Length: 520
Image 1: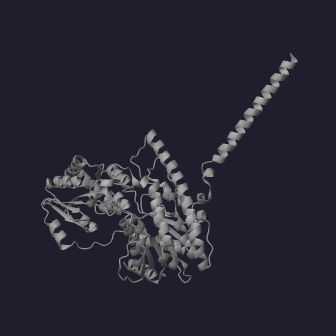
Image 2: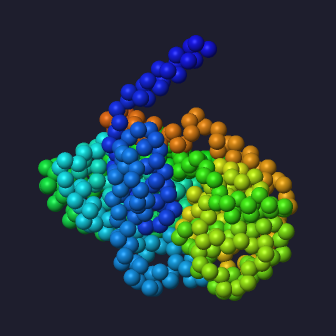
Image 3: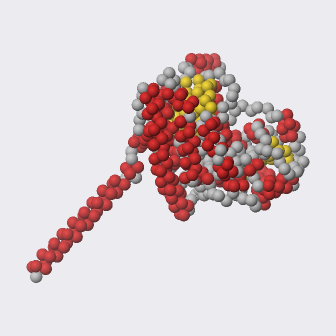
């Protein structure tokens, strides 16, 4: 017992005496879900005693010790002014349009957001000030590789945070390119194992997106070389090339875990941290607490996330859902962002804002109907709640395919006439106890780790700083060109040798035949 006490005191002393770091965290994306992940990083670093400068489109407006926030919410103004752009993200306008995330338009949208971020006056002022110094820069990887120039301005390590399941586009910057024969594209509709045609489709997606990335890189390079040099000159530093900056990441933290996603091979300088954003539970508002406590047959929670909202449904879909919910004995809590025009059944409670984690943690919750976003999926499994998913866009389809494969939920295809399929899925998950048991089983796997994801965030960031960029974890393959990795140069050499030998043999045979003819 004495030894345990002494060990604990030593560890505590090391933690207290460890030098506080000053860290820049950049999460400029203009969607609430991305900002929640950003705040997860910020909060874990603050809890570890570090000073944080946080660039965000969703500042909390509170005075927090050791935290400075820079508001860049104006970078989305160009899209808010575009009525067509706002309408495009309404649920009724996304049905049947394919996956927006799987398009060149999506890449250009993200590029525009991040270019606006780098040109935001408050950001330029921060980056240009030679007095500003950081021990590390944390960047969300989200198709925004031109942001990799930021750490070079401060001569400090770069830590990427991937907000989705690891995939070839994100992992290539760490040289952890995944094989499409046995790993899924984040915008796929397929599930493992893949048949011949699905493998061909997976390879085609890689080729198509690689072409899109090459085009996008030309825009990014122009922005990189037009924005950074002027700022660097004010700081008295020189900038690396675009390619050197992009592939100079020291570590990648990944918002994923094999229990809810795929068991993907990762490079040494990366770690899964899904669930790191989950905070200590806050009490439910009194009205919701009363509703959930008094629900005799349990509660169904319905939310489609923060990007695509329920009030963007067609009126017909709203009516159909209300009619479906009215037939359940369970109480339904529906996150609905505006006032409902139709009469709402007695068992349905509409809330414009929902404390999702507190709802998921309530013992009376039976089912979560979700859009299948990475945050909602990880939060549900954190609390062991089965799912019915209606994926809308981006990685949500892949997330729900994984949920269905692992047995703790059912995926429903989004459409105007989806109600019969949705109703069947809800009744199936509610009545078949196997889904709840599997959710609890997966939840145990999700929690069974060497360290909690919240502790892993500061640990790895501190490790990178302590080891001066963790260069010993860097894959040597990062510096090897793709043609060499694929042995294309060797294949070309062998092809040339075979052709030369073939011609030589043909020449010698011809010469020999000519001699025979002359001798006769």
